[in-house]
Length: 173
Image (spheres, rainbow, N blue to C red):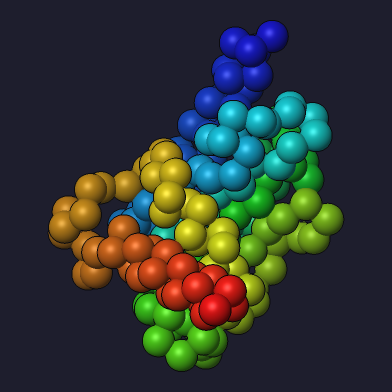
């Protein structure tokens, strides 16, 4: 059973990675899995698959349309995954802005169980997801830090972890 679950998840991750590279190209800096899958307590059919996609630029309506098509194709080809995939599509500039001032005028795309794929403003609400992705560093797509990106995507997410830890320490002080 474990091998069946692993194969199902790996197949989905492969399809998502290929689909995103096709529609986003170099705009996709990295795609990382976090949450229950990498923590080891994933339950097929019950758990959702949590991912973070770091982008070179803020997504817009065109990006949303392309991402919607990728997710629709995955749901059509593997309906068992419908409503079980959660992805934050966010630019490194948005991450930096949230770190610097707690919010931003930057958009991001989000899909999660119970809500359709949509544009939202990047803000601190998503920091824990970003931190989890950074801590697990289970990359499906992406080059290592310094691999020619405009900015170092991993360093941007490391900043998220630093801010989240500082906030946690202030809360318990």
